[in-house]
Image (tube, rainbow, N blue to C red):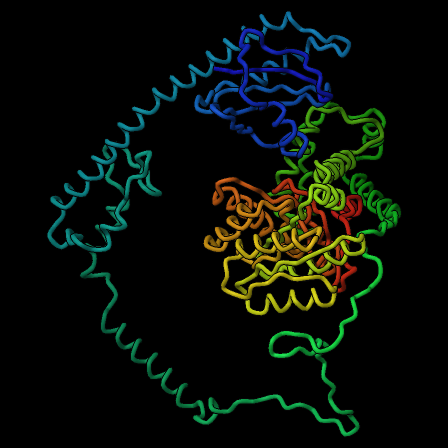
Length: 621
């Protein structure tokens, strides 16, 4: 049974709801659908599941893009109603016929809805009955075929001579026609009185073994010849060659100066205490506080449009294309959009967007354009590109504002430190980018302390200690093989005592499938309740971005009593990818978390904000 059905405009005005249903929905499934699916360019999906305390709903929807209307049906997930899609399409057709933009009430649509609902339910019942009638026939057919198969094997063995029945225990039993679920043999169709072809074939092969089988003596002769050839080849190889090892010698130049030591780290004693005074690193203003200027690419866009028009003119006549561009096209169909969407999908994938994400985006854009009327003097490709650009901007723009500096001052007023935990897979640059974030915070007069909670990787504590010494900030460390959750807790307590405003927690790199390490990470987050969980990911990653983020979120939710997901993304190695910027889109789309920082170099200043317009422009080049 339907729980609710409503019609509203894209602007949010509810035009009609079914008063007869009138069921009070638990939670807010419609609001969640709009926020999490329709606004996030996931409208290409078939349905949306919503879980509320005491209820689980499935929501299905359809659009009338020309009239900017949305039709949504809500029902209990356990019911699996078959007629919902059919009902929505009929309601869309009937309602669009009576829709008037100046009208806001449609009470007279109740009777039409009841009639449409009865029709849809009747169709679903007919389909059910036809399927139920069809199933026994198939089952009987399968049984008959099974009987025919068994009978043919037994009967065939009785009829055949003794030389033809030697199939017992042979390979023929394994490959003999096995019945599938629908009763058919693999790659064979069996009638009532027919014997399976596979059994006949096996019977012939086994029966003809006396006359047509391969001669075993010939096979032994061929093997002996091959062995002799290999022996002669082995004997030709000289014995001394495997022992020779060629090693590259260093070239010595006559006028070369003496080699200088390339280690510029500060000398320390055995106890780890520094022997020389360290000057704080001052590399200038961080790129986080600089505005990025984007150069206009109008010339390249003009060239592309010129190329497209040349291709179009070859395909169509001059008059027909000109007339179509002036008059506009009738309502866009999915077949009209497919060529442009396929080209867009391929383009996104070449820019390192995960294939799954590119496909979902194209489906969402198709759903938003299908049924719309093409404006005059516009092409389908440019319309699709404009819709995709709008979708990408909407996805990459953060849904909620996360201002770290504002939140730091708010936590300071409450008398507690602001805690940031850096998580991610191995080798993505968590410690280096943690130091960049610390440098940026220091420039804004924030007291920072680092916590060395990577007690797993050798050298991790020393690496963070070096950064802390260069930045002249305190570091809390307990060495290796300690529980990182306890180390982080003691670090936060120490920060509260010494008046630090921010605690940056460095964690060990871990693969998303490593359950023991993921369990330790979820424990660290649960015990310490950080203000911000930052996922550090490489800009070089492609399809694996989806797997990494989805599994990190899944493990953090499943392995903790109080589920906590990733709050933001720090994208590293952005200076190494040229125009392959698709990882940013994949990560944001799959997690819903914004890209808060972008690492673009090796110095402390090489940290900047994500420029959404620049990314979108690069993706659609």
